[in-house]
Image 1: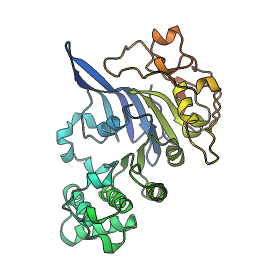
Image 2: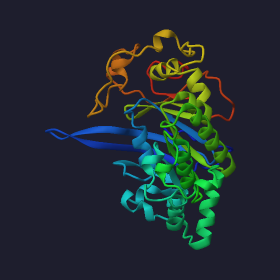
Image 3: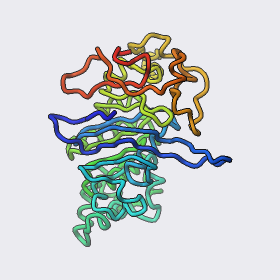
Image 4: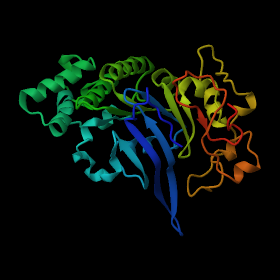
Length: 346
């Protein structure tokens, strides 16, 4: 099921349908690790969508597929009506839509060429994707760096001469310089100190609003996602288990996994976040199911779920609208893939 994260009936900028990505896990007979398994969603122009889940749930793999750094096994990615999967990842750098989709990586220091200065790192994609040369190229690169508030005195420095926050600004400037419409951010502040994280996050939000960017924000930090995004997808072992407005998902989680994540959000008073779900739905014990050739008829969360019953081991739950979840009239629907949550709001 695909939700339309749009406003006033406008077609979505990004529409993802049935996306699947597996990797070889060896063995005889050959086994496959299911990293992304049947993911559907849409994203409107200018909107921010958060993608959350534990390490290994498939977030970064999904981000890499959407950025066309790797190919899916199956599924479609429509960007402004154009099927991005028609061009293999190895040729995507030369596709006409390449400059319209850019990515901000988890560790800016590792993603920047150590031989290029800050302004050269930003100029490189402008030359390749926008065809700029000479003074126009230098001016555009300087404007992008200025937009992220990097002091001009640092334009000529190499990556090892910059702090973590300064590197994050360079990585962000490099991404926005070509004039993208979709920005994919994969844990963009996870390598930074907390005080610097807040500054960079505010900068990202300001740029999104000023430039009208659609943003896919990948993070394991639920507080960050709630602050940055209007909508959220919750992934578990390659599948989306809950999605909808951020406030509805975090305040009224309909899936036991989401309830467990919400309960783990730390608070300044040292207490755990108390979601609307009862305590029994917030406890997660046991070991995760293996992502290698998982049973297609069994809920992936079954081994850790405090509420699992026989049906969970016999039929994979599908995303179902949640009745009674408080939401604005124009908000996207709140969906959850849980046999106990269908149509009940949890």
